[in-house]
Image (cartoon, rainbow, N blue to C red; front, side):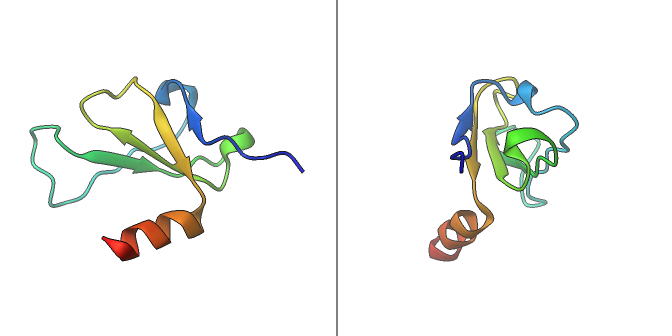
Length: 73
């Protein structure tokens, strides 16, 4: 089985995703945004990017890894 990617060099390589940010976020673009790709090798993973750099890289997490990370915050 092929290992899923851990990142993409540009979040623009995830077409058709809807990026979301927390409702607690201000308009200052100082937060992270998340998206759930549904197509290609990234389907089913959670993508995370820096809102200050929307065309920059995105990290990819399995749903289980992301849930574990956020539970520990």
